[in-house]
Image 1 (cartoon, rainbow, N blue to C red):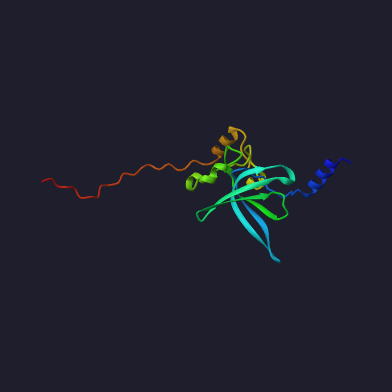
Image 2: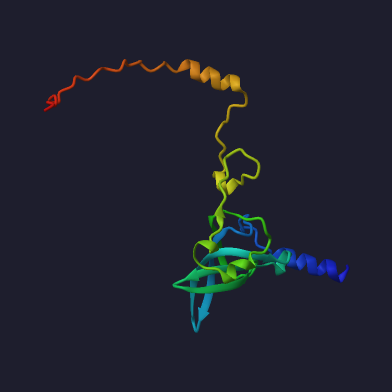
Length: 171
């Protein structure tokens, strides 16, 4: 057996399978195990993914966050046993693979545009739609058929209001 194949098999066993599908620009929460002395606790770090690097067992993500006026950036190994859980908070819409320009900006300039994904559209993920896709009528005839079944609203004629104000007298 080749040494590189043996290494690939060992790495494949260590890969996590519960990592959600997220991209650069998404806001995520990482639950990270921290060991302090004899105690172990979980710390949650929420921020924008500004970079994804590497593949396989060595894949890392850089998370950027501004809290209380100070900017923090932290790099997490994605398949580390210290990463307890990853949650997607918000989907971002960006056109770059690395968002390093966010490091120097504050306020509204540091915001990432939110991506809205409709169920059944191209790019919809199972997590976003909850695994369920609502039925969308495929033809315009089905929509017209549904409109014909609904009764029309009763038409109201506008009523004239009588002038109750006192007439003004000209002097």
